[in-house]
Figure (cartoon, rainbow, N blue to C red):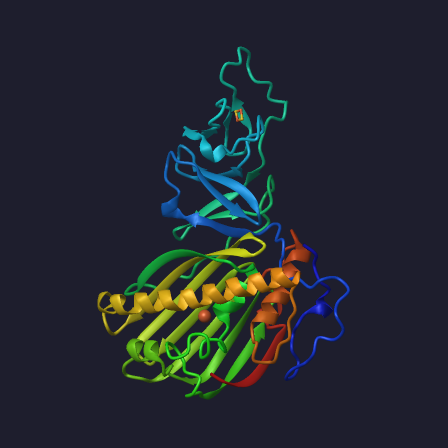
Length: 378
Ligand code: FES
Ligand SMILES: [Fe+2]
């Protein structure tokens, strides 16, 4: 997993800018993000007394709840004979391996070896790497660097107050973290890949987008966008009205889409994306919405449409990953309407290089590092 020089970034500065001669080392959007937090599972998936096997960045991990119910995360490999600890069982504050019963605490220390007649010598290693874990907002987060004190806290999901319906979902896409994040926040494909459902390729509107990049995030604000003309737009906001639309990316893996349509509807979809492997990403989404039409009436109509949209995205991400594998690498060209993809790429590469160096929201009143206004048809 090589990291690229920033000058290698496909950040467009004009229509159809070419990327220049082929880079000497293969360009890759794949990143290894040490000292960051990613969601490992929904809180409801981690049951007391039951170890849960998960993966992030290709590392198998096992999660379990200690006696107080707090999540703990260890590398999923017993230090005795390489058996997955996720096949074991939880005993009080410890996880017991399923083979010879070695018991590990949440810090990864072996505390008991069944059958051993003498006390365990505490100075001998006999431990497995442990990852910091946190639980908040119905999700369990795991730190990507083993045996390290976290240098930052996980992203806090926004709460939008009473009167909203909240739904938590998780789905897996076969695409890199970058490709999945870009897909979640990319507007131009919606009129095309999802033609008719949300926007339509025929009935386009020319609008203004304001792109802003900060040290730890990027956003696009769409100004003057009319209600989407497709089926979903008509269902959500039958009264029409103008749209407030933001697409936001937060390091290391959060994609957020916010729509306010007239006085009828407000949607906030926040997806925390976890790279399972280089080309497999799991999305943990918190969908919060308020509409004039009651949610229970819309659900039977909206759910199949949402599933259809996700199936179309999942298919295109899969084909994209397969093509990258077939050609042995990635290649990108962009125009200025590829608004967030290049910014996400830049921020991810920066985060990969920074590691434990913390660059949170910057000084200067958190002024954007970059602000651009772009005209585009949606
Ligand atoms: S392999 Fe885990 S206790 Fe022996
Ligand atoms: Fe899509």
